[in-house]
Length: 200
Image (cartoon, rainbow, N blue to C red; front, side, top):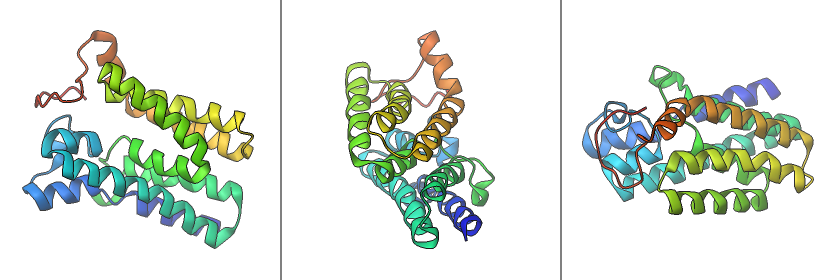
């Protein structure tokens, strides 16, 4: 049942709402526009606030749904935590869309909410502050995934949650490799920049 739950989590994560909404709203492949990323930020940049917010919420709900299903199927805390990894992996490398997905930040928000609402609140507030000050969504996202395992540890959550969140952070850093390079070079896009240059 654990393995089945993880497979289902990956398949749920593979539903690319950014791709589907962009096709429905504008008839485009979101991965060929803006940053080329199939996620909420690029949807916001290319299609506007409504579609961007819709993708953010739906991608976060994927995380909660996958973990909820795993809990119902297994009742095991470790399996529940690892389901968060599988749903994020599905978002990042979706089997339905040629393994070209997003960076998993919105889905990570749902997973973290499933771990601890307080850890979610702490990480989200810090990330929003960083984005508000710098206007770099990528930097805020990296702050988010860095703060999560620390918050979970300090809140004395199950160790499986802490270790899983550390792996999630590694996922995020790998997916944001180009953004990190751009931040260092000073060429990273800021929130509100509608430039169609592909910076990664």
